Image (cartoon, rainbow, N blue to C red; front, top):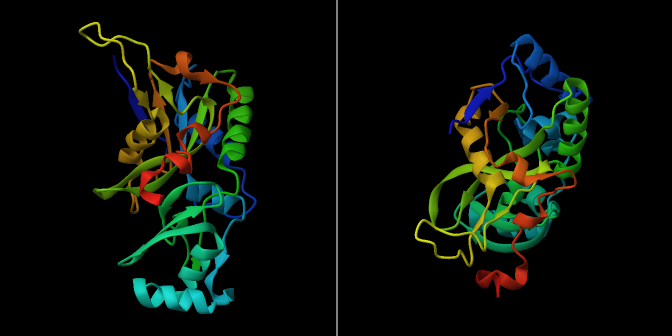
Length: 254
């Protein structure tokens, strides 16, 4: 088995109103890459947020008393704290230089996934308003243009509980089920799997993150080719919801 990771070159700095799907198509054609059935296109969320105009000017933020109080605790810029509050439904915990919260999308992560990197000074980008819908539109465009069965995953970089370091994480998807339920299958010794569920979209996002990088690599779009379970996980109506743990099963917030 072989899986290939292909970083798309020539992706420009995008601005509000740019057509991400067209940009990806042009990059694929310019690289002479032979797009295949089952290829999975992973896109950094900042690229989509910027193209969709989902950008926050920190100079226009009015800081609340609550934001000032939290900023004093976590030693963050009060304006960033206010943006985090504005994009959250719940503050879970406040730590040194981070705020664990639940975003409007249902993701529990640090700082509501507000990003100040890879954008001009004084600006910040929240994650896309609807990453699943963004992924769907891009997938449909590329499938029509290339005549291939594809999947699109929107990625973000997030930390993990009890682990140091950030990894690529899926926050939106289209064309592939993000969760591979293997309950009922047999292991190497013939025992039936009882609880095994694989966050496949997260694993793919982490793999793509090795190519995307976190600094000035300039490769915000990566193609994963040769993923053997594509057909098994193919789902034309998929979204990221299967990966979100229901709050009643989150033992750390009870």
